[in-house]
Length: 326
Ligand code: GZL
Image 1 (tube, rainbow, N blue to C red):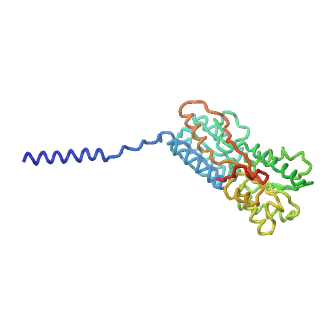
Image 2: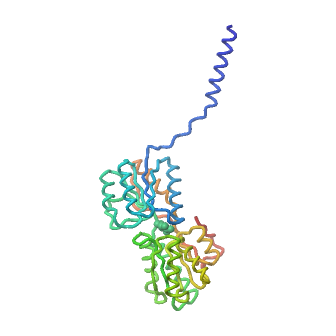
Image 3: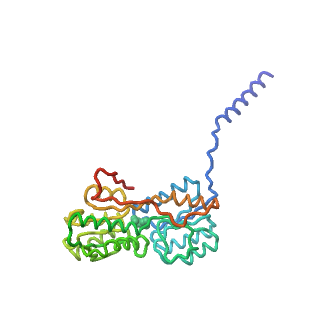
């Protein structure tokens, strides 16, 4: 009997030890105590979809809980989301303002609630410095200047006497629309070789880019347009569809200057169908979450952070770095 008892105790011991040995160490739990409220403006372009993915990946890497709400291009839904985040007492609010105006009231509510706000991707107008804690996003004015500088070089290379330009702009009153236009015009405005004959808004949407290009061709004919300056690749790709259907050779009969740098547009550049792609990186999530971590740790953080960006074109040295899209 004693021998049986000893055997059973040994058996229990083996299982207990074995059980301990077999039980894996619990994975380190992320610090989900930090909650970030994120209002994304929509899903209008490949840029926006990549930007959202960047935010989700970065929040996961930092172990933050991300309360994300998509406004489907409606400012009133962004304002509603920000109020939800305030009511939920999130630690930090991050949002990409679809337009520059109309935020003072809700951002005052966030300030009164003691919740810091980080602007990601787009800026707000006449911002009372206290209405936001930091901005992470492109310098759109420089992006516009790069587009203009390319066109000046291209006109020199072609020994062009005069060029009619049409602009397909992004969402009216958004920061990228305002500053990509301003930077472009500041470079070409004084050069008598260039005339901007029309500007229409495609709202950063491929479908509206197609509509805009159709309308512009109807108004001016292909022979009346020398350059299309499009504020994002999605609208440019829509314009390409129309030019192809109408037998116009994009990149040759009409020059195309685009912004963002998504894969399909970079391929069009390599195929000679687009002449210049100004880079605008969507990968802002890492920088945003690093600032959130700084705020959580009580550190001071930079007010303005711009990513390093460039431009690719048909004037680049073929032996130079291969342009890559996102
Ligand atoms: C730019 C971003 C713009 C992109 C578009 O940072 O706000 O919005 O250029 C996107 O593709 O729709």
